Image (tube, rainbow, N blue to C red; front, top):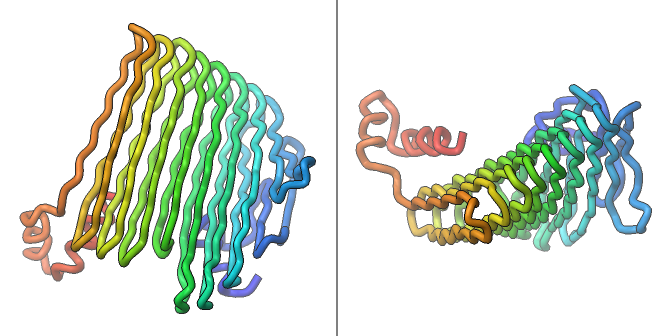
Length: 306
């Protein structure tokens, strides 16, 4: 790998070298390295679509798999399909993400469809980061779609972060939970300039004791536009919570539409939404400690998105 590719991998996956354990690194549409382990097998898809299947054996513990994507071409678009099959009782870490460096005049785009089949009582920690840069005028576009199926007692703890530089993103997550299954989502997005970001969550709580906690935090600066939509549907005795908390700056715009649907008298569902600017007293307090106004804003945003 050259230094640019190493930088992108560090931004999206905190990788300074080839990771331990299972991994698949995709660069400009081609496999740039792959390794399976005894309990985690990565293989090309059997249906011929671009992407991979990741099969994690039942009761696999304390293992991880990295599947970062790097794009350094302009006038390049791809859609990749990755399916995860997590066996019963497993407890693993999955680290994904996409980094785009576009120095050209045309669009560079990555659309990723991740489908999770998580077995009974399995636990998955999933971390996904998106980052883009480049000194050209070409757009950097990322459109992730996540489809989740949680069997009884399964847990998916999902952290997604859009770090910087993505000009347009449409992020869709669809989940179905069986009895006792739990979904925890923490989304963090920062937009600036004329960037656009849309998020859409749809969660079906189908089994007794199923639960979802979906929280999005975002900052819209410059003239950027953000849209947040979420819907939690309770079809049994379950509990669900969805929340959007946004800071708006400059001439940014944010729309938040959380919604609930209860189809069971025992469904307990809550939604929250808050949009506002940085409080002036917060900035003044930090400026009395020696920070400039810009530095104060940066520290507040950093703390808000941490």
